[in-house]
Length: 129
Image (cartoon, rainbow, N blue to C red; front, side, top):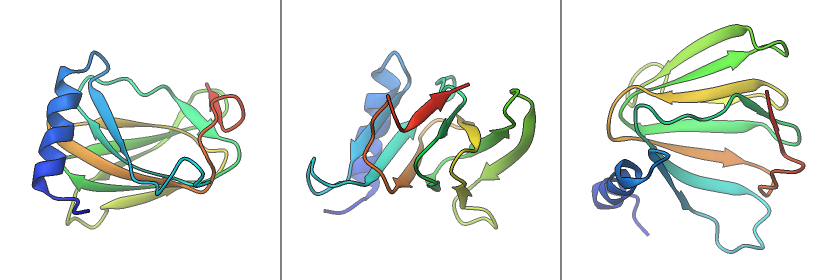
């Protein structure tokens, strides 16, 4: 499978049509795969709640567009803001396990790829601030 402009354009069109203004594409081999690997098309205005992962770190790589990863402390105070741009000095970020964060799209057509080492379970792997 190619992760090419056609696929990214399709995901972006789906994100634009979604009330949430985002669309993911699962890259795992099967539902038995214990990791999370996904493309995520995120449009400006999408709201990704401030959250942390309690059982895994997360790696985010921007494939196109512009996004900002924002870090927070346990009280909700912003502690860092990191611009992600393909081909720049910062095209990716590692989010440590337990770090509250969110991702904001700064340009239409933004697509990121996310990697986590545990299977998604909203009851045990994510904590919303």
